[in-house]
Length: 533
Ligand code: 3NM
Ligand code: MG
Image (cartoon, rainbow, N blue to C red; front, side, top):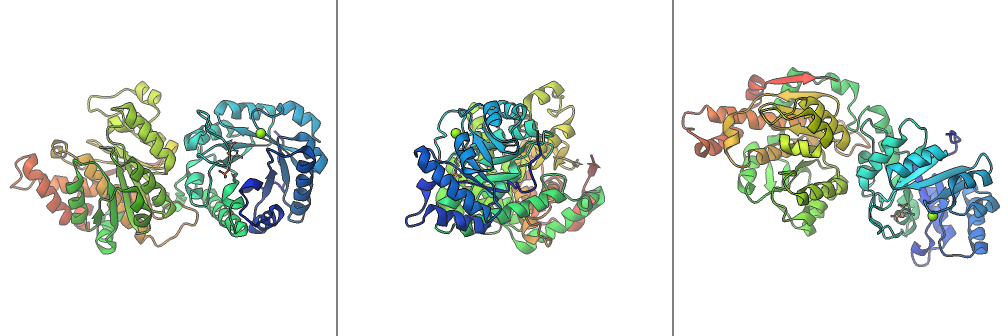
């Protein structure tokens, strides 16, 4: 491909939509406000005007944008692009074939292509597209994207970014992107090796706004903050080399120990949408650690709850509150709250598999935790099957599985078992505390989700170094290690109590030990090994 000129910045790509203008706002007034707000490229998209009117709109747009040094791209109509002196054309999958458009346009013209599948992205690369529009990433009412497969989701954008990696073809995502979901979209839309978007394309969030300047400003500022942060750290998690140097067994134990006090000091609200079997014990575990539990599931209350700092756990052991789960995670993302996802029994039914995919498309988890069966189901299944399952129900290469799942989902992954494997996609931490009695009570895995969300919530509230552009503040790898160690070490201590004779006496003893946990106990008992990549 060719390389785009220095003036071609895709950060905030405005696609026009005159039918969405608020009452009393003219097309050019709205456009000029958007340009003042920081739009970096404008596509003129007209679906129902005569050629003469389209040309007039295109010319007016080109002359207004010239004053802001913003290039103009014409949707679909190569003739209008030529006649208006626009910088290029954008082609949909059913528009003029790429090669013909390229031939008709001057050599310097920018030609972009809409793609919804990896195959279409591969084709656009072969054709020599300058950039691609990937989507629809979310459902939108601005354009009819109701055909099956037309909304490709975050997962679809990821697959297309993998195709684009190393090609030099730039990419924007489009479809339902708003300032409210921007950071989640940017964080989630990346290939496993971290190839990310060059910008976002937006219609309604700017055009339908009575204040397009403020709307554009919000989007472009958030994009730039994210881009700056992403360029500093090698992974989605914005882990700097200095942070990585801290991941020694001693340092992890020390951080986990300190977080035991942090939880009691900041008293995080630990919002849990969890299954009917474990609600009471999960709330008691939260209280024992010093957190404040709330088990609220109604969709209508999620926006309010997300404004209170703390952590969110979504455990779908029983899926009664799907709308609440969808809303809770989205609002948590918007408010920078960590989201712990426990996909209980995800492989058991096709409904659970589909629900997990739907939830992971709607919001970005901070941590995914599961046992070998659950993590195996979410991980690339061929890889997992090829690696086989050993007699303990684990994986031949558990480190590789958690690392690659973390990369694919851009989050922290914890695989629980006799040894707990934890990864941010780069470092793998192995922890070998715990007791077999944990396997003899119901909901031990579920309360692990609770302790992790309690520690993640506290760590995000207590962090002193704010990382602009990050979806969640604080080191969630360390917080997840802390939540895991808290439960597994308390379990060891509970099991060794004289009065504990089996699972029945173990559960209350476990809650007591969580309440009596101290930093010193963590430091003394934590069994940690680290595999740096
Ligand atoms: N193209 P909004 S989605 C123009 O998927 C367009 O190719 C799409 O509008 C595609 O930002 C879309 O209001 C509409 O959701 C985007
Ligand atoms: Mg088209």
